[in-house]
Length: 128
Image 1 (cartoon, rainbow, N blue to C red):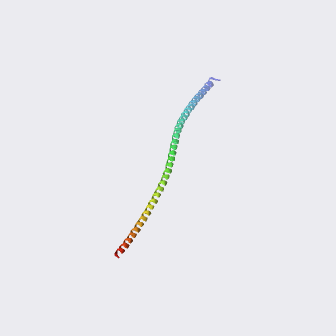
Image 2: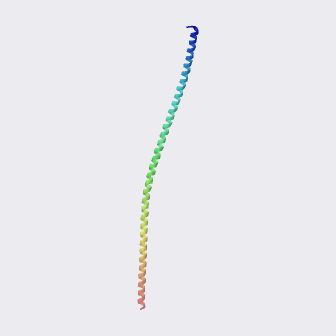
Image 3: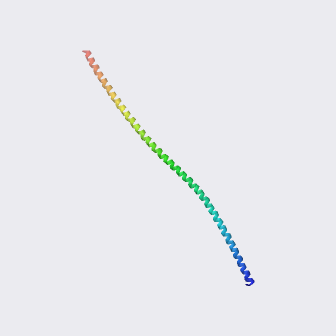
């Protein structure tokens, strides 16, 4: 090999080494970027896991509130029905009292009529 060929081969080898070094540097940068991306994704995944846990806790709380509200509504419906039954009973009692009062009024009127008839009869006898 001539010194010129050797120099040419050495230059090509040097270019290849520079190219390999540059390629290696670029690949290392990409590896570092991917590592950073992976780290960021892991952090984001951790945040999402926390968010998911908090969200599920809120959903559970909401469901418990809903169950409690439905139970309260059922109790209110029972209370309303009991209250309506009592109102109906009181209305019946009031109606019965009104009927009794009307009967008392009729009896009173009947007694007054009987008393008036008796007084007239006594008055007629007294006039004879």
